[in-house]
Image (tube, rainbow, N blue to C red):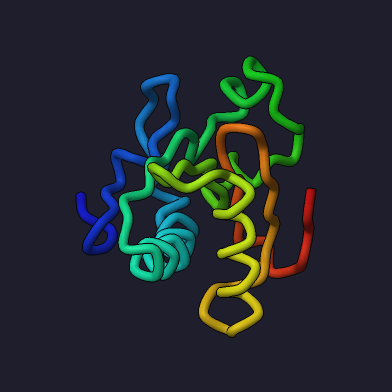
Length: 123
């Protein structure tokens, strides 16, 4: 199922193989709207390493107990050819410009975390 011109629901399904919860559909749609802004700005494909996670899968991989991944409000992403710290800086600029929603933003060595928590959080 297509969620936007560049993202499909299957990209956000839990990596444990479980079905995407229908009750979280509005959350993932809001997240995808924001990621589409980034995709359009960079004009480069975005790979979703981790989207929704079941509570069990989140615990298994060592995710924090109240992870936004559990509610389908977060994604760990990689933009081919763009270092994670530059992806984070680009998102910060898009937020400052009012083009992306404020939320959680974390830069890791190989990926960037973005979530739509509605308040600023950085790590």
